[in-house]
Length: 429
Ligand code: HEM
Image (tube, rainbow, N blue to C red):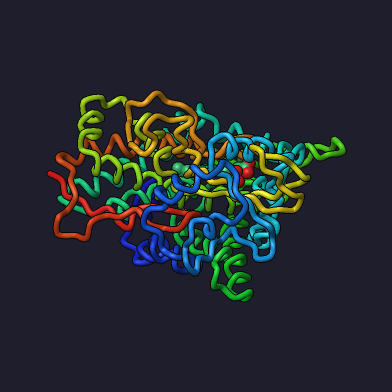
């Protein structure tokens, strides 16, 4: 994997452009929100489910939320119970919404927008490739361990760095792309192409070019693996047939592999970058929790789950109401849009004591950071494995890790759709 490590460590000015929470937020047309949680708590006290789009209910001026659709009646869920129901009852609150939000136009049909048996037919064959066992063995032993080791070896001699860019961003995009067998030299170009597909400001021509770039990178891998299979996920997809609704058993088409590959690399790169950054931010800003973690080094898994509960990177997911339905006493009309606020659900005092406190010792209870129900995060075990290995490497190998006082303080920023640290400027040694 030496050319993999060379590509992973190479200075590339494009990285700072594509992994920039502030620029991503502004580019999407959203306002930059510093701390949405006090507003969410006030709103949750008024009711579990409320009429209105979340940004409007919170009063963000000029707010342009990616999941907003003008003219659609919209409701928002704030409590754990209502949000969990919204995720679990995918038959009533469906993911067909992703057609309306342009995601399917962006990169094609995938498990993200499918429902019921159709969703299962596609998710079933790929699920084992992302199981806890696969994450801890194949993903870890083939890619994650080597990626984190190379990055930390590069960082540990420097005395200081921006952990957000130098580790949190580089690790997952390389891990997930290498997992699919993408040429290491094309990983960053691929990332640029797939983010361009959903870019708010791109023209149809620019989106067409992004799709052409992404397809050409993937088609090389697919064509090669159809005749010379290896161990990567594209080879495994080719070997894992789909059973159609009429019982026909067939291979994935090139287009199906391409759209799923784009979805998974897109979902797997940005989220883990921001969530790992949030975890490091939380530890460094809570010295008593950091001391606990340093004294109990087998707690990395709990630390990650608590940080994801306390501040999930993606606060809101959308759904469409399939039939007139009552949810927690509120009537939702067929065709309405639903904003499921995982961020508010994760701080519901009905489920968590003192929910605003970041506390790595609290009894672990399932939060909604990775979703729930049929569409719960496919990559959650891979992501957790990446974050555990990275967190342990950071706190084992970068002694006396602390904020760099010469740099602007790190902030957790973004909109409601995607949040993360502005940067993580640290010193060590
Ligand atoms: C900390 C990191 C991550 C977080 C917080 C996260 C969160 C989520 C959430 C909340 C959903 C549910 C979306 C919905 O219900 O509409 C989801 C779905 C999904 N995630 Fe993740 N994710 C993370 C990492 C990953 C990784 C590493 C991968 C791939 C390797 C991945 C792949 C997916 C896919 C494919 C789906 C769609 C599943 C479906 O519709 O059946 N995610 N994720």
